Length: 133
Image (cartoon, rainbow, N blue to C red; front, side):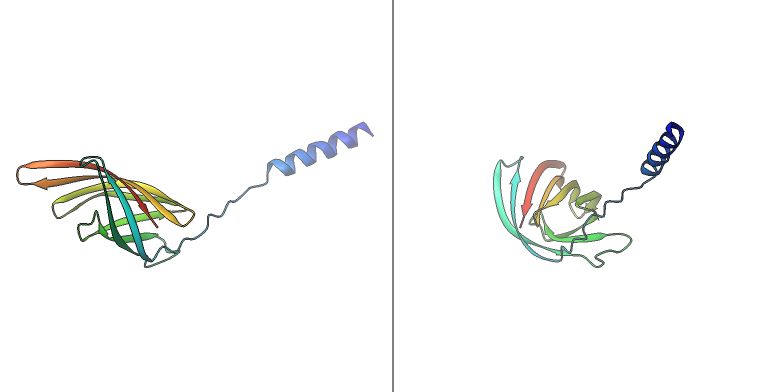
């Protein structure tokens, strides 16, 4: 009796430990227009403007999104979506070098990015915080 109880207990532990738990993150369709509240650390000022996000493939292999009018500079930034996380890899666009990351929460987009703006022979570094809704 004790052996069978021990055997079934062991069997239960082995079967429970072999279970894999998969957490499916929701797919976000971010395409559309957003209002932006941006805080610039360099200028110590808030700016309001709008952006457009183009998401060619909602669940494609790249999960790439394009943010149009980023930094209110009429530039298009390429970003990558991984679940609710957004990654803006380093990229050079015109006079700007851009890099950042963020996340999606309650349908809003929150981004932190660093912008290096090349003006003449100098470079202005601006750390920004963006809330898009």
